[in-house]
Length: 228
Image 1 (tube, rainbow, N blue to C red):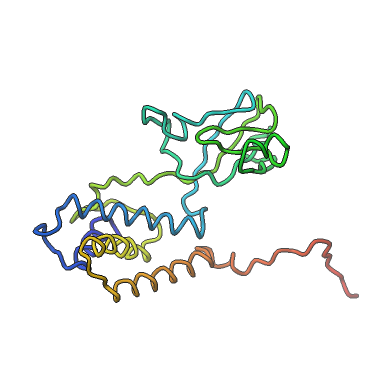
Image 2 (cartoon, rainbow, N blue to C red; image 1 turned 120 degrees about the vertical axis):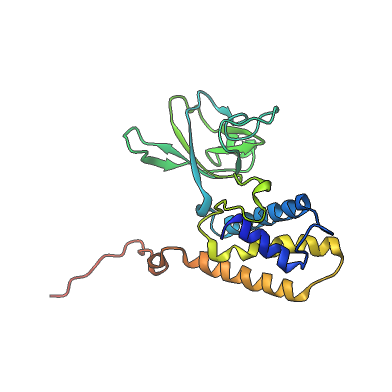
């Protein structure tokens, strides 16, 4: 689905086809919030769907991502701001972006200082357990949406993502905000929302590559025995 199609579905769900009781700006805000909820639901189940990569080369035990991966005090970032960091790996000295290993995360600087892990994120600052000079790190992160709130409008053909069959959930999430404003609970809408959420969870649990659901992790120490 495109943003305009989701917007039209949202309008039909709340039975407000024009702007008499809900302005365009209000409808766009609700659709934008609905999409943010949709992305959050997706990333809670499978963060790999939206993951992008960012490379840094720290020169000490701390590296501030403000102004690069996160917004600075002035509200500026060097790339699309990160919503969440998924993992950090150290790039091998060879080519082709190969990783030597993934760093072990911790929650607090105290745990880092006690060598309970390799790093932690404190606000916008990465704190490492040792000097990372000359080591290139690959940050795998989930970026904020690049879809403008104004894209949620009739006839707009902005692409959303590759989960088109599940995009009605965006309209349902948006309609829930209208339902709160309207003060009239809609049990049918909530039931449909829950059903669509379960369908999304089932889809993401299997994965977009169906063969991955049949993958069996080898047992440690297992070896194939050849019978003569």
